[in-house]
Image (cartoon, rainbow, N blue to C red):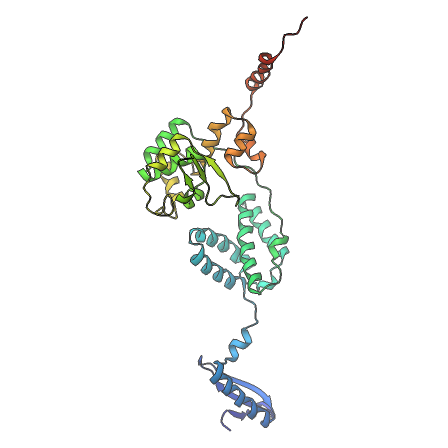
Length: 335
């Protein structure tokens, strides 16, 4: 029968040969001729009905290497998270030499811990390690969701302690120089940050539907905390928003994906080594002398007072002024 044969150097067993729709030529060792004849018929039916391919079947349950999982993850990010794909690429590019050749199920929490420890030993900060960990956790989380893995190994890897960055507020002179370097639309973004404390990502996502100029409040469309946050608007912020054209559902629909880099480059052009986040530092630092700690924490939308405390500068004069307030309120007591 066509497709059933013996190999002279392979003993008495019968073999079958057949070609799948993908063009792969397959050979299988079966045994008795009757079994080989029956199997080749089944293979031909499977090819005709389902496009059966032995190569595909044999590799269907083989887990991917980390390098392939990373490629698939970046394809997803390019499609669904284009604004952060460069960051994810850089994290995975750093991980590939250590993890790339490994099969995904072989990557344990211990291996990931070893990799992150090596990164930290090479000079990466705790914050960088935590961001690397977050990307790896998201990648492995997707593999769990697909059924490739049962458990996300990154879940058992502890986060690193992060040294808090010192706030870098702008002086009024620096603010003026910076605004001169920006184009009109960028200037509005910067001034809005200076008067609201909004982060760049929050400004990018802010929708017009969440702005109420009549009530002078703004509900943050995409807050970092993930919780509903409403902030008051001063007259400057209201005026900025009132003059802003409504060209789309968001305040700045044409903001470039790499605006943070553009901002930093323009700042350097006027000899300022600052990022967009420094505008938020400026907002909080300028409020600090005029409000209490709890109020500052709420306006800054911090979840931990330790973060707010970095903006509070208390010296001897502050303390003396505080106790002097008691003198004003003291009752006259007969001596």
